[in-house]
Image 1: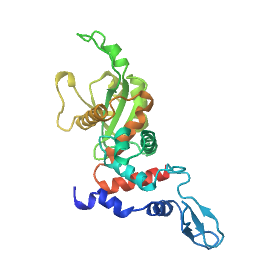
Image 2: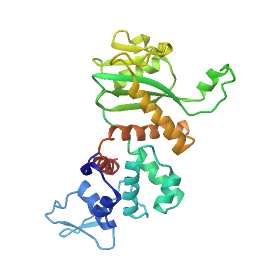
Image 3: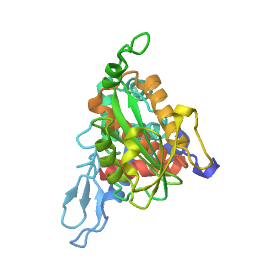
Image 4: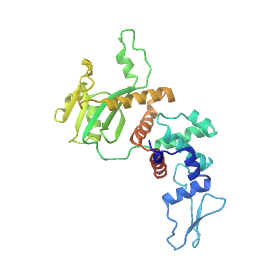
Length: 287
């Protein structure tokens, strides 16, 4: 990664040294300095507002954003966003609490609001070569010495479908179950009809014979056959599982989708630290 693509704490402190600088950035992103009456908006001293020099109308830039009615300084908010943008394996609320010097409740709220803003609104379907796989996350249940209770153990876990467009973006979504109907709904929602699909030999893909599909047979220890593989999706799952186990320890199905959105967003913006921070700032401001 070149120096131009990096974005360190020094860069953050240079760009946003004070709350006033942060507020000015929010205003410039969401509003125009020119008022419809012909006046110009200027910051109000001692308040988080801008006022028109002619009609005296006031705008609170933070209103309607994740910063609305927050007593936490904007510099700490921007610092938290910077930490979040660089935490490719996730960051816990307890760690954010320690780094920012705020309460646990405050750190949890900051992270929760940022995650909620990351929901993928891209309606374009994946095309070209698309890898698809299913994973099972969370849940703890002993499967027995010889896996005689394996089905009960799997039932405790959340089913997650993932699709990756080679050279493009990745999507991940919690499924109701590991059935053919559930997989068909996922594919029809996220994968274009003309895409070439790469999967394993699971029975849930037998229904897609009308599509251009290639499979690898993991049961016969076949993991790649030229360009036929799902290694990228499996690598994503490996990173996802290790990060959740190491960073968050335990996750409920209720909040799992927001954490999936977190890892998907990081993967889709993984190449440039500076751009990733800028994209995250824009995302949370327009959420």
